[in-house]
Length: 160
View 1 (tube, rainbow, N blue to C red):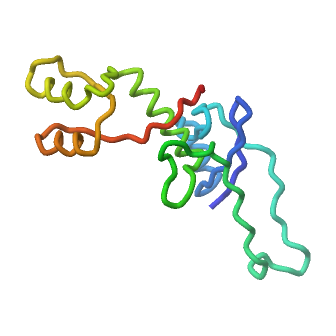
View 2: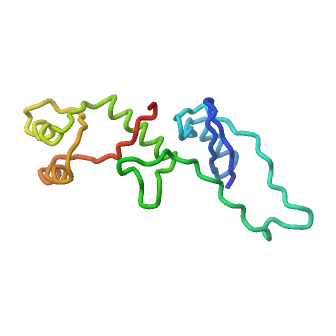
View 3: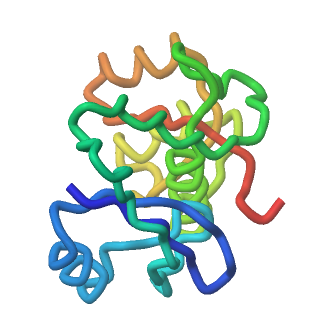
């Protein structure tokens, strides 16, 4: 495994682990390496100091290096805290991109979510992507009625 310090065109620093340098090059060329903060694929390796053991000491005898500090995520609000702690920055960025896609391609129906889903199921309303609020009981009732629903963690927008 090889560890690279990476930076996107917007100046966000992050790190990545790859099987070897060829794996990094292949993934970067295919557009699979992206900034966890802004999603940019304009990513480059940063200059890194090699880990060279002191003369007469092998790396195997040295204590393993401490893990790098994780990027701090914004303080959780409204149930955004996972059981193990705050949402990692990379997960938060992914959830923010998912929210943007839902808002871009689906209709917001607010608290009428359950009833609008039922109207679509009965053919009384056009079938389309919708999102809104539903209680745990409403979501369970929709699933019992054979209506597919998914609950998504709703995080603050990336732009605001």
